Length: 616
Ligand code: F6R
Image 1 (cartoon, helix red, strand yellow):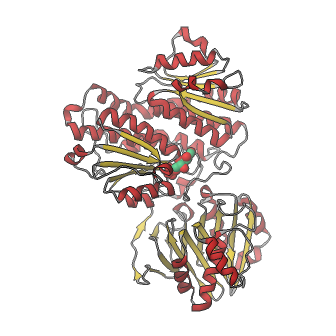
Image 2 (tube, helix red, strand yellow):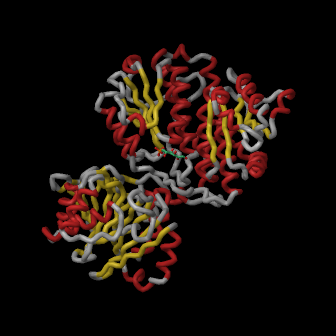
Image 3 (cartoon, helix red, strand yellow):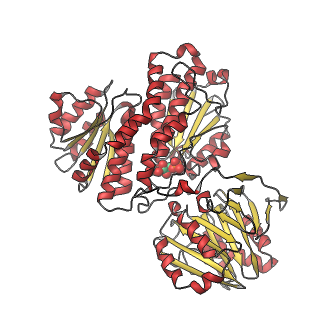
C-alpha cells in the first residue's frame, strides 16, 4: 500500500506534494513525509500519524517551501517497522545524496541489507525501503548516473515496488520505477507529476502515462523518458484521465462515506445505462467477449475477490447459478492462491475489485490466466492493473470512492453481477428464457434508484436505531439465502468503521454454536425479506429472542403478530428476494455510518486500514 507523489516544475513543490498526499490518504495514513530539493540541497520532513502533523511541521519551514520546485512525498501504511517518524519515508542513503519514496514490499530486503551492512551502510530504520535507498546509492557510486543506478538496483530487487528518487548531484530530475505497484506520470506544461493514483494529480492535469512493470523513467520539467527492462527507450501511450477534481470533494457531506452512500441511486442508473434497455429486451453487454457458443461451453464459474468485493461475489453466485445454471465457486483471493485450483479453458473466472489493485486478487488472476480460463474483471477502475489483465473488462463506473469503507462500489458490483447473470442466461438459452421472473427482476432494477432514494430520505429511523445501539460492544447479523452475504457485508461495515465486534452468520448456523453468545448484551440484527427463507429466519429470530438478545429487524414486511419479537424494526421498500440485497445493504451501510459517527470515529479513514491493499 502507501501512496507516493513527485513534482517537478515551477509551482511550490510542497503545495503540490501535500495536496497530492491528501488525495492518497486512502492508501495509508499512519505517517507521511516529503523531500524538497532546492539547488543542490534536499530537506526531508516527516511526521508520525495523519498528514495534518506533517502540514504543521511545514508551517515552520516556509522559507524552504517557498524556494523548492522539485520534490517527492509519501504517505505510509506500515508493513516493515512500526509507524514511527524514523520509519516514515522519504529514506536516504548514508551520504544523504539520494532520497527515495517507495510503495510495495521488497521481498529480499534482509538478504540485501546484510550485504549492504557488510559494505558499511548504516541503517536508521526498520524498513525495506531504506535498503533500496542504500542499494540505489551504491549503484550510483558505480555509475554516477541516477537512471543507471535505478536500473541496476531494480534488477537486484525481488518483490513489488513503485519508486520515486531524487539525487543532489542531478537536481533537475526525478527517477521512477515500478513493478507490481501502480505508478502514473501526469503531464503538464513545463511541469510533470508522478503519483500512485490519479486523484493526487487530477487538479493539475488530465494527461498521463501509465508505467508498466519493470520500466524505469526519468521525469524532468520539460521531458519524460521511459526505458524498458532491456534499457530500450520506449514511447508509452498518453491517456486522458477520466475523472474530474469535483469527484474527490465531499460536496457538503460530513464524510465521504455518507456522500458515497447517497450517490448509489445514480451509480445504479450509470451501470444500467445502455445495458438494460427494457424488460422485454435482452441485456446488452458488449464488454463481455465470449460468443454464445463459447458461453455454452462454460462448465464452471469461479469468482475471486476480497472483503466487500467478495461479498458482492457471493450474491453473484446465487444469481448466476439461478439464471445461467452454471455452478459457481466464490473464494477469497488470498485462499485461492495457495492451493491446487482446478480451472481450464471452459472456466469463466470473475475477478471483482473496486480498486483493481488488490495484490491477492491480482496474483490469483495471473495464476489462473495461465490455465487459459476466460478472465472477466468487474472493477471500478478501468485504468487499473486488474483491468489490464482482463479478457472481458466490465467497468462499473461508480466514480472515485474515497472513503475506505466500500459502499457505492459494492452497489455497482452487485448491479453488474445482476446484468451479467441475466446476460449469460439469455446468451445461453436464447430470448425465450426471458420469463416473468426475469422481467420482474429487470423492472426492479429499473426501479431500484427510486427505492434507494426513498430509503435515504427516511434515514431518521436508522439514525435513531444507531444511537440506541452505539454503545454495545458486540453485534450479530443474521440472514439466509441471497441476503446471507448482506449479513456479512453489514457486519464488515460496522466493525471496520466503529471497531464494534460484529459478525455475520447464516441465520440457520446460529444454533450450531454462535447462539451460545446470546444474551441481553448482544444485539442481533436480522434481515427478513419476504420469500423462500422468510419463515425460517423468523424462527431463528424467535430462538434469539428466547435467549434475551435485543432484536433489530431489517425487513420489507412483518405481520402484526410478529412485531412483538423485535425491539426495533427498520422497514425497507417492498421487492423480491432477488433484488433485496441491493436495497437492504443501504440500511446496513447507514446504520454502520451513524453508529461510527455517533461514537466520533474517523469514519473515512478507520485505523489500521487502507483503501487499496497492494500487499499480499
Ligand atoms: C471494506 C473494503 C475492503 C475491500 C477489499 C478489497 O469496506 O473496502 O474489504 O473490499 O480490501 O478491495 P478491492 O475491492 O479494491 O479489491
